[in-house]
Structure formats: C-alpha cells, structure tokens
Image: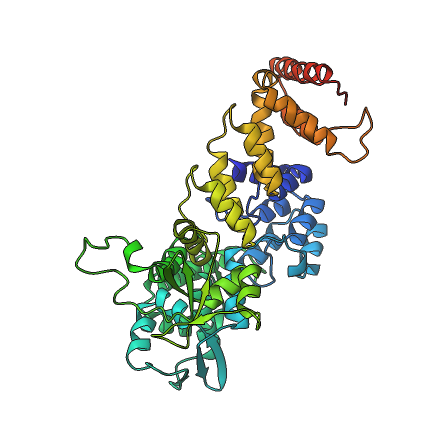
Length: 477
C-alpha cells in the first residue's frame, strides 16, 4: 500500500508525502511497478523538478547511458528536468543512511576485506570469498573442492575470459545485480554458461531484447551499459542462508536425527571464526559479521580482545558471547547472512534488544515490523514506548496512526494518559501552550486525507475527544 502511495505521490509531485513515505515509512526509493518504472521516472514524466532533485539527492538511480537513465531523459516533461538529470552525479554520501544488504555485499566485493581467494584474469586481480562464490554457484563450489582445492591464488588464462565480463559476473554472484558494457554481453553470457548460471543467461537475454526495443522506438537514445536488477533478493538471500545453516551446530539443523543425510554435508563454507554461545559452537565468517555490524568489527578486530583457539583447527579463533541464548543468536545469525530471519511476537522484543546491542539497525526494523503486526488497543501504547526507546521511526508512526483510528476508546485508558503526560514532561523547558510530540502526531493522522463532509465530522469528534483528555489532565497545546 505504501509503495502504491509513493508512485501516486510522485505523479502528483507531492514532495512532503514522498519524503514522509521514504523517511518515515522506509519505502524503497528505487522500487519498480509492474511496468518496470521507478518513482523518479514518474516525477520526470510529470515535470516535478523539486521532487526530481530530492529523489536524486537521496539515492534514486539515473546513470547516463543506462536503460533507466535514458528512459528518464527521454520521458522528461521539459528541458529543465533534462538539465537536472544531465548534471546529476550520484554521491553516495548523500544517499539515505540505511544498512542495505546489497550495499554491504557490494562493499564486500569492492573492498575485499577478509577475502580468502584471489583470481587473476589476464593480469587483473580480483579478491573474493570462497564462501560466497560456493554458496551462489555449484560450479565454484565444485572447483574449490577439486581443481582449485588448497589454492589461494587462481590464474584464469583462457583467451576468451574477459576481465570486464568476469568482474560483472562477480558482481552478480555477490549482489544479484549486474552492470556490463553492451560490447561485453556475449562474453558475460559465455562465463554464465560455464558457471551454470541459467537465470543470469535468461536475464541478460530478456534485458537485451527490452533495450533493443526501447532504442529502436526512441530515436536519439543510446544505451551503452546493460543493467540487471532482480525484482527481489529472494534467490540471493536463499543461497547465502546456506552459510547460516552451515554455521549451526548439528543438533540445530533441520532434520537432525531424522534424515539419513544433511543438506550442508556436501558443502564446505570455509569458516574463519567460531562463536561459542551457551556451550554451542557456531562456525562463521569474519567478512559477514565485521561487514554487517560495527560491534562485531570492534570485537573481532581489536588486537587486545581475548579469544581462544580451536584445538581441532588452531587457525580459527573462538569468541565466547555472553548474555544471549543460542535461540536468539540463531535469529541474529540468519539475519547477518541472509538479511532475513524468523521472528514471532514472542521473541521480537528479545531479538530487538540484542539487535540494538550488536548495532544491527536492519534487524531492529525487522523486529519493528513484527511488533506492528500485533498492534491492538491493549498493546499500542507499550509498543509505541518500545519504538521511541529503540528509535524505530516507522513503528512509532504506525503506532500513532493506529492511536488516531481508535482515539475515542484510547482516551479512556490510564496508560495512554500517562504516556501523554510523560511525553509532555520530556519536552525540555516546555511552556504551557507548547505542543506535545505524541499529540501532534496523532492529530496529523486524524486530519490527513480528510476530504468528505462525513470524514471531517468524524475527525472533529476524534479531535474533541483528544482535547477533552488534555484538559482533564491539565495540559493544553
């Protein structure tokens, strides 16, 4: 529903609404609709210059000579919009600071921290991680256990292996996305066939056809770079979740003691780290834990931190984690590797506390989504307090939106009156007529999108109920 609202708001040029949806509701800025169009495309098409500038400044994709970039340029309503697009240079520092999974994987590939394998293709070096390549490609998994077993440097000398195509192939394996110059597409397809990546081959062929049709029908356009962006990360997440499954102690794996074999038995994940949690050992990877959490980065890269060594594998350090159960750590483990984890209303708060301690804002948001599913008149105030405590802006907004819907019932709850008083007291040096943030947010949701006469009457009744409560507890704002 929020996604549909974003597209509608971009067509209207409603900057305030778009800002609210992106910054408060966490809607993805480069989301696509069923016509493969983005919010930026509609803002360009409808000529909303201020909105176009806002979207570009916050991470909307529009690189020159790409399908999306050329489409926005061609579809722009006027030359002013086209000038804004042509002058645009993507500055990642200005993009919204969210710990996006694909951004982490892109950094993992580009920076190569904690890499354990180097490929040399015609003099060009590529650092990589065997765990990622093996989880994403059966071809790489087999080669690491056979022809390349025990090697840290692999030289690929075949004359048909192009370094640019190999770079794009690695990008696809790490992120699920791919950028390739049009002239190297056939080289990339040849590599994909060798690595048994049929989905990539089909995606390349589909994209080539779409670009050809676009360029043929739009004179003056020129697409030099082919970009593939999957509609979702489901396959990537599923593949990398295998690393989490490999990290689990045997007794926690699916089918333990029931099946004659384990799905992870034939796959080696090449761990370089062991976490000990409640006397259980989890074999993990520094690249993922350090890359996703500043807490673990400090813990594992601090030269003064004390760690044991595994007797069976002395090269693997053992770090004991305290104040966390193995069940909760498993939830963290799956999030670290796959950006998703199984949560329930029963464990969401405990996972949220751990996510806050381990500096995992994305996991905190997942917990917030789980808590939002159980909002009711009895829980909304306590969940709102949790949202405030852990700075979950989307959950906080959902709570106040829900409060606005049931405000006539809610004003009868002592817990709600106490929350309003507490929120008023939290305003530093508050004067008698100063506003109260909680009350302001509820009023906003009561009055937003009110258009019909009956809706205005209903909104006024709700506002009266809220004002009566404020008067009864000696607050005016």
